[in-house]
Image (cartoon, rainbow, N blue to C red):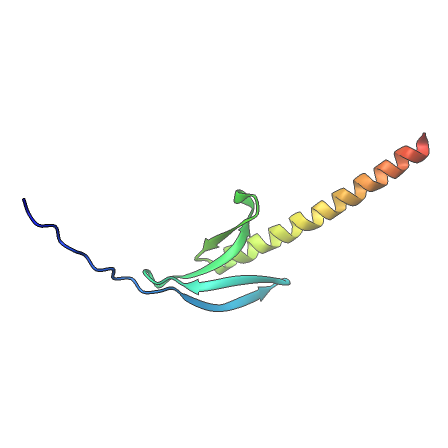
Length: 92
């Protein structure tokens, strides 16, 4: 039987880069230790607004815009339901 070779880990540590402020939201960025790619953290609609990483800054920015629209839509819905409940109470 052949002796197994021991492999050394060749990757380096990831480097945290400066965050990017976009539309009052902080997009965190880092340089991946193994690949050297720059990754951006953003809220993803496809994953129920959990933070995801992407290599494309434009994708991160569009995710932030969609997230802001989602938050403003929730505010409008809650205000609408409050108005409807007041209208229903006054109609009785």
